Each structure stands twice: as structure tokens, then as C-alpha cells.
Image (cartoon, rainbow, N blue to C red; front, side, top):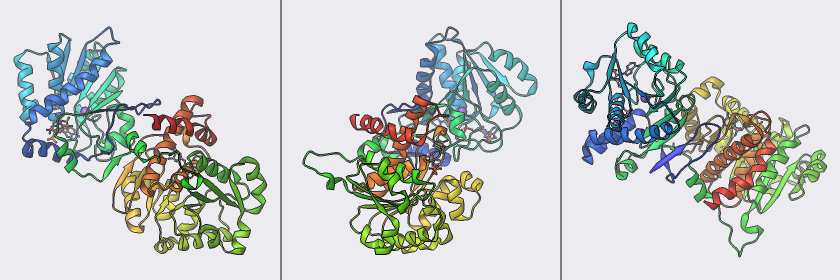
Length: 528
Ligand SMILES: NC(=O)C1=CN([C@@H]2O[C@H](COP(=O)(O)OP(=O)(O)OC[C@H]3O[C@@H](n4cnc5c(N)ncnc54)[C@H](OP(=O)(O)O)[C@@H]3O)[C@@H](O)[C@H]2O)[C@@H](O)CC1
Ligand SMILES: Nc1ncnc2c1ncn2[C@@H]1O[C@H](COP(=O)(O)OP(=O)(O)O)[C@@H](O)[C@H]1O
Ligand SMILES: [K+]
């Protein structure tokens, strides 16, 4: 299997598995050990496969280049070992290669040593960079090469990058050359995507077997550029046995989640959605969420808004039914929601006492899946233990600011530990948490986390969260399981946003433009 994820502006994916685990450094080490000790695949074979898989990607980049000289910059661990394999293969192809070794080469051991010895035997050009005095020459040398290969540090990164290693990385980054990183850009921590002092800014990264968290989360994924995930021959049985609790949401997953439409069905087959949204000054939130739910296939939609907003809604959304909130309150909300298949509450609702009352009644009495967003979350923050009264699956969709209010942590803390914060919240309150932002993460009460890679900064625009709520609601109304509906919505939302960004640019796209792209995004996924 080869799986390509382009983290640049234009997204494209080649084949991918239904579910893709994302590992931490130590989990990857465990998987390597499992392959070597339990499944008896010699480590040297894995290293050979790893090296060859990078060679394939480098060759693609070389085609367009007149100057084909490659600089392979290696550390003294196994990441460097992969670099030695790459060097040998290109030398065999008659391509000019210089191998640089950074650090104390007497530390090279194991499989890396075997590959280093081969390079020495075949008299490959090797330059050892020991200290600062070697840097000037190194910088001059780099300008002669067309592509630089970063094989300095991989999943064995331990501490802040300093000294000669840091100097080398600075020169690589300043070279202006295309850089392909082996496994992970050196300096990025595979466990969390943080930069340990300094990191290589690669144009492309080839990672092995499964992505590491640092390949996916920011800033690591920014440093990695385009990401290619390559099989290196670890048996599927070993991979499956890892049972990591962190996964990447893939297109295949979403394709299998989207409900099919059968000929002998009617609008009742696609469910009833009920959205409580909007307040004076924020009618747009109700319109955006409602339009989106219909665009995502809801059979029947009712939107409850304050009476004064009804004419605006009726004008903007002729396909949905509108209800005045005041009437609901007077006659008793429960009567209104008992027929529904999903209830979404919060977008643009404001923070009135009336809304608080409605929220409490809905949370305590809902008998169908519930989506709480925006002001629903702000109100919830005043009385979070309300969640204990839930009798149904509940999805909360906070952005980091809302999560900060819900948890009492700072926004910085939320962003620094996105996975853990979402997971802890879900485990503590028994809800599905979708924490928004660059790499939206979704956690369930069982401690599993799913990361979405679609989307772009153009989506940081008013109302795009309301569109997401509409998407989750639309899928839930059709009977999609809550976790699956949330994952598919996050993926589709980001993909629609990416299309809008391509069409209009990240500056000019607006939330409504994301809705405009939904039909194409769904059709393309269903077609595949
Ligand atoms: N295992 C396998 O079967 C396979 C593994 N594969 C490959 O192996 C990679 C993992 O290899 P690895 O475990 O040897 O670690 P690696 O990333 O090379 O780094 C360790 C070296 O770096 C050093 N070092 C650490 N931090 C540092 C710092 N801040 N600044 C400076 N130095 C620092 C550290 O030195 P020490 O801490 O010991 O002083 C040690 O020398 C993995 O990413 C993949 O590419 C593939 O071939 C497939 C098969
Ligand atoms: N840089 C980004 N990359 C990917 N997605 C983003 C980025 N910035 C914002 N988004 C997405 O846009 C949406 C913004 O939602 P939210 O903050 O609730 O906006 P609003 O309240 O204005 O509707 C979220 O789904 C978020 O994940
Ligand atoms: K690397």
C-alpha cells in the first residue's frame, strides 16, 4: 500500500486503508521489534525497504531536474542507516551522490553500520561533519546539489537539537534546495509534532508503514511538506495488532460511512433533523446550519429561531420548516422534539436566560442524538455537570476558545495538548468531542482519537463552524452512528473548504462558499 497525503494547498490522496493508525515514536519502535522478533523479518530488510521507498519518491523529483546531484545528510542512528541505503541505490544508478555524516560516526551500529560499511567498501564519497569548522565547506557543497535528503534524526529524537546538528539544519534550511525528509523532518518530535529547538523544513516527507503523530499534527506537518506513507514490509498482522488509539480519518472511511440512497425510499427514510439556532443579529448561524443539513441529505428539517427571525429564515431557506422558539417554550419544548431523529442546539443562540432554559430542557430530556455547538457550549460551561443528565449520545464541537471555557484551561494549554484534552473531556463526560482547529481531533468516551487532515486557514471565517454543525446534524438524521457522522462531517467540511480555497482563495472564501462545495465533494467521494 502506498498512501499519499499532500499537506500543501491542493489535496490529493492515492489509495488508502479504511482505517489508518497513527503512532508515537515508542509505538513505532515496538512495531519494528514485533516485525523483527515475532515475525522474524530481519531489521536489515526493513531498512532496505525503507531506503528503497524513499528512492522511489526521490526519483519522481529528479525527473524534472537537469542537475541530478544528491546530498544525503545522515545521522548516526537508523535514520542515517536509511540514508546509507538511499546513497547506495543512487550510486548503483550512476547518479552522483555525496553522503554526509553528522556526529560521532564511531557510534554507528547494527543495521546502519552494515550499510555504512558497504558504502565504504564501494568507495562512496563520504564527508564527515564533526564540528563548526566543517560547516563552511558543507554550505558551499550544498549549493552544488539538486536535492538534499534529510536522514539526520527520525523516531529516535531525544532532546533539543543543538551544536553541529543544529548548524547543519540551519544550512540545509537556508540552501533553498528541495529537501526530502526520511521518516520525519529532523528535529520534529514524532510523539506530538513539536519542534525540539530547530527542525528541517522539508518539501516532502516519506514516512514508513504508518504515520507518526508528528507527521500529522502542526507544526510538524508544516515542516514535513507533502507526506507519503510507504509500506516497508511489516506484516499486516503485526500492524493490526498495534491497536493504537489514534487514527487518521481517511477518504475510504468516509466513503463507507456515507449512507446510500435506495430507490424504494422516501423523505422519512432520511430522517428528521431539528436545529435550535440563531438570535437577533445572528440569524445567519441558523441559516448556514440549516442549509447545510439539507445539502447533506436530511429528509425533513425544522429550525427553531426567535419569532422575530422567522421572516428572514423563510426568505433564505424555502426548503425547511421554521418554528418560533417562544411558541416552543410556551407549549413545552418536549412535544416539539419527540418526533425528531437528531437535535442540534447552539449556533448563534446568544446567551439569554430563555436560551439557557431551552438548553437545560433539551440536554436533560433528549431521546435522540444531540449536537451542542457555539452558545450551547458557552452556556454549558456555566453548568457542565448538566452533561451527567444526558441519556443519549452527545457530540460537542468546541473551538479552542470554547474548550478553554469548558475546561478552565488556557487556550494555549488546549492547543498544546489537543489530543489529550479532547480525549480527557470525552472520557470524563461520556460525550464525543470534536475539537476544532488546524487538525480537528475527535475523541470518544472509549479513549479513541481520530484526526482530520482536511481543511485550511481560509476556513477561519465567521460561520464555518455552523456549517460543520449542519453537516453532523444532516448525517445523524439519516441514522449514521454518532462517531462516524462526526468523523465524516469533519472530513467533508475540510474537503469542501479546500475546494472553496482553490476556487476563491483563502482570503475571500466565506462559510456559504463551503456549503456551495458540499454537493461536489459528496458526489466525488460516492463515485470513487
Ligand atoms: N528500527 C527499525 O527496524 C527501522 C528503523 N528505521 C529508521 O530508523 C529510525 C529510528 O532510528 P533510531 O531509533 O536509531 O533513531 P534515530 O532517529 O536515527 O536517532 C537516534 C540517533 O540520534 C541521536 N540523537 C537523538 N536526539 C538527538 C539530538 N537532539 N541531537 C543530536 N543527536 C540526537 C542519538 O544519539 P544519542 O541520543 O544516542 O546520543 C542517536 O545516535 C526511524 O526514524 C527510521 O528512519 C527504518 O530503517 C525501518 C526499520
Ligand atoms: N487553519 C485551519 N485549518 C483547518 N481548519 C480550520 C482552520 N481554521 C479554522 N478551521 C475550521 O473552521 C471551522 C471554524 O469554526 P468556528 O471557530 O466554530 O467558527 P464560527 O464560530 O465562526 O462558525 C472549524 O471547523 C475549524 O476546524
Ligand atoms: K529525518
